[in-house]
Length: 312
Image (cartoon, rainbow, N blue to C red; front, top):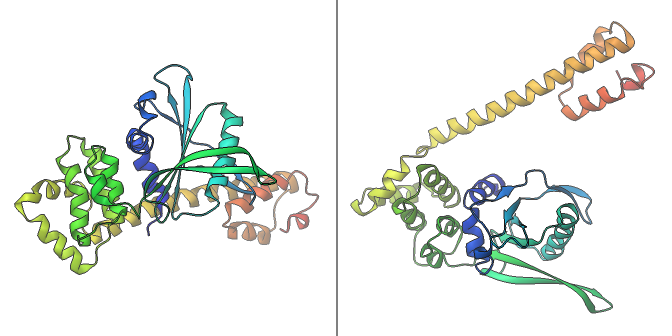
């Protein structure tokens, strides 16, 4: 299955209001869902593992009632359902509360597993078997849900998420087409259509025979709108590969450019500290490719008594 982080983050940010209306319809009317502010740097320590974790999506949303003035909506997207997820969400909720002091709507979306549709889950915290606190959150299990139910909904996000759901009686090609028909017919801008199309094509993968069936279906006059929408995106494997290589090339260039600058800075600091450097030292530094190692050496220059102490 594709890496969900980039696809889901972009989709959920663009269709944020849809998500809240689907998952928490009783809360949605109380929020100004067209005015979210996404907090980009919510980095916490994952208890008890101790690893740093960046939360998938945290939005600050104005209340339509004014009290409370702002509400946080925290969304985690998980590749599969895991038993301790409720405890993890609780720990993140406590850290978000301590940092922002805002009421919270916690949501977890499971790509695989979990109960079907949207359910209200709770995580009891107990002392000697007696609960002293109960944490409540929403869980949305995609893979066990029925795509047909969500393709009837008015929210574009529902049509995209149907790509990961059960599609009883449909081939993969028919399922992809069913997910794209509502988007093709909807009065939404091309940028959003492109996003939905890209998401559905990413998660409804077709083999050669299924791709042939899909292309045959697209030639049907009844599917003209979907065929037209398909022209908005990359349509051949060669195009996709060229685009992927282009993006990866840009990222590699950025990374190599950053490391080159770090090496030059380190050489400058070492020369100021120890005078002209031996050629062997220069060669060792030029051979370093780790940005973290270059940064660590630069931090130690002022305190190191000699090049030998730096391992250079």
